[in-house]
Image (cartoon, rainbow, N blue to C red; front, side, top):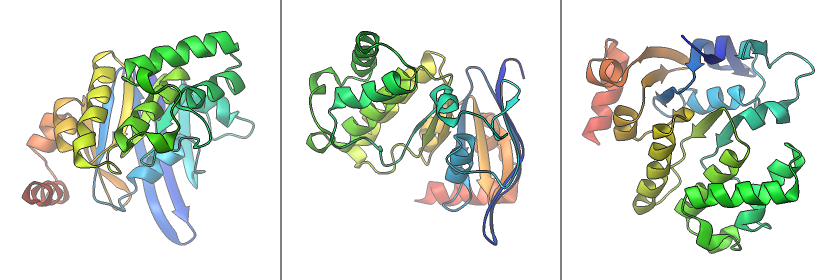
Length: 246
């Protein structure tokens, strides 16, 4: 794959005796939009949390531009500024305004000047349609608006890759579209994205690649047409048929 940004090699993760991920191997290339699908409990979110170093893999390697970021001495905060994450539950700072939420990481981690951080925060909040709410606190805005702020906060760190952990699953149905529209626009602009999602239309229409996980392993991996349109494994066919019947 040209322009590999991330390489996950033989990644495994166990919590005590419970093996959540088993020998995961895949790469993320520049401009890829990879949707990770699978039933709840298949290890999708744990995989993202390992990639973002929020969980420590039990074994295996995560290479960012060839450097093993699971090695001792790696600055996790600096790495996360390159490989950002948008969480299911937003994870905004409730005591800060929308604007302040988008400033703090830029100043503390990237060491930007306050003036530059302000300019960039305003630009990314404008990009996700949140300029009218700069001075609002998270409790004063909807779930969809919170998630758009969370995306702007991640973008303000100017990441090379954005990880999305089921970014619409905590939202009311009418708010899902506004977040997916922001994500589609990012994909169209060439943002490299890794998205754990149950939104099959997004996986089909926006992804360049779909990964189906089952019981902690990658069961199927290919283009949306291959995995969603012509799945080869019975487990994949079963998952998709149950999904379509809902």
